[in-house]
Length: 458
Image (cartoon, rainbow, N blue to C red; front, top):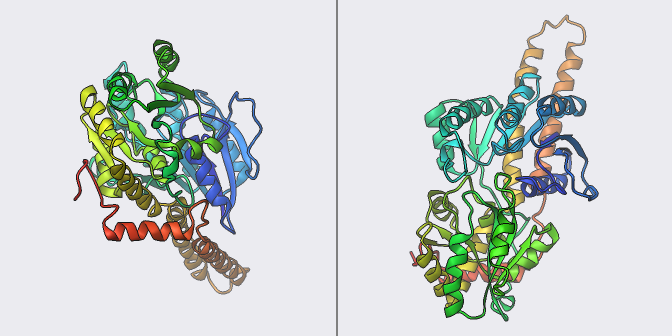
């Protein structure tokens, strides 16, 4: 099977580049899959990652993206065109973003099988938090954009509530629920010797400036340090495209505070060390724009999560079993108290860490990719069966009838072999040993890692 993956892709730092990288990594491990990444152009001085065929054929905020991407697809002649998208993936301005989101529909019209992994819905975005100047126009545009996305052959969203919105409001389209998954083949067992030794590192990670703002956390952290002197706040990530310069302004204000460190963009190879040395990850958002990649990244390394009590985070706790300690969104005093309570309670840290790494084991990236491939294969199998049935209905006297039937039958068999190969690929342990995995399972069964939702057992 030949797949074209349309996504932002490293060394680009645009939105969803990390998710695109992990999709491509897992697809590259499956025999019988030929992958081409149709990535975004960037200005970063770095070479392409080894082991990937990357075609840089679109650019953020470019009006020529539809033509360029469709031309690249025509050259590749894939069986599946897979889009890894948010509504602003192709642009931060209305027109290029709208034209970009129409590409899956246009690709289908040219004869390609198209699938969209949609990371957000317009209906769940808080327009005030997102800094939208004309909310009514944005809502109308969002409705039209969603209608266009649903013209793709199939669409995946990451929370059941998102599918319910699409089915109820739009009433059409082939919509699946696919979990976000973790960014690895297997989670890493938490290394508790690196946490609180000597500092309790509180990690804030993301693209900052819109609904992800640091002011409440920075204000709360002054209270935290008074109660937990060895606490240290680590702010990682970059500015949101809509708020350039936000982090620099905040960093200048707190430059003299030695308990706060701004580390900027974190390369892929440094993420494991950063997460393993963090006592907790804090998500002080005022709203959400999709299933949180940072929450799933924390689960990958067994990091407890402290987060705003907003609907998307509640859904993650309820539907995926994540250990999240909730505080009222925007409430500085409650945020400080929740952090203090967690940092002073080692048993609670271990309990939440084990629960999160256990949840991560149930949604590894290889398993998520296999679910996608089963969908692609089923859809192609149905198409092939229809084609084979049509060939068999041809008159027997027609030239090349039997050769056509044999050819289409052979293609069906080859596709079945590909999907069997995908399902037989073993999940490769990256750092967690078998003994550690057994320990987690035993701990959970004994009640050591009892599930939590709001800071209490259930």
